[in-house]
Image 1 (cartoon, rainbow, N blue to C red):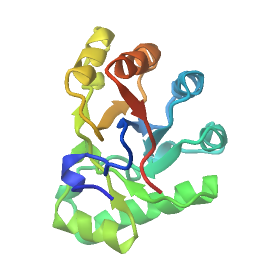
Image 2: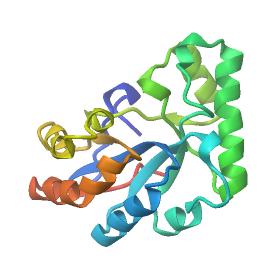
Image 3: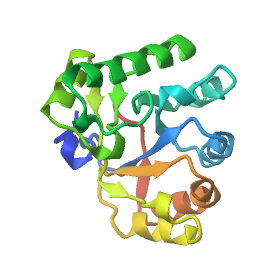
Image 4: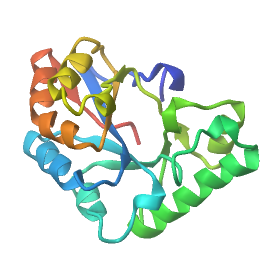
Length: 196
């Protein structure tokens, strides 16, 4: 599916230049705003959720109905490399169970918190049938609350065909998302989801 999970690149499937938008650390309060912008721009995305934040009142049904994907970002965002195999496995297995129980949709993707993982992490993910997804382009949006325009620069200056883009469910990201999508399109890219 990927050249390598470490590279954060989608396998080429067409003649178009494509990128994938991914959002970590939700579901958060800004999720409806993100979904509004994605729908208006007709752009799919993948959301990596901490299962401790997911409850029935979050707009997960709308997210799926709009054609987006949900992956796991563990239960509560620990550094998995500091945990034993058993604890890593539990973080993944329990988070998947919660997401699947609430949404009724199979979880296929996993993103390790902080992008930190080791062989044990990969073994746990593999045993659960999860594909580990990292990123090629980091927006650094979590550091840019007061400089949201820099998020656009950070992304557009590092685009390449097949790149997976790391964003977060943050207010500053929600504010610039329509402009970011337009800037990516102006560079000649289209958007697609991770392969099913």
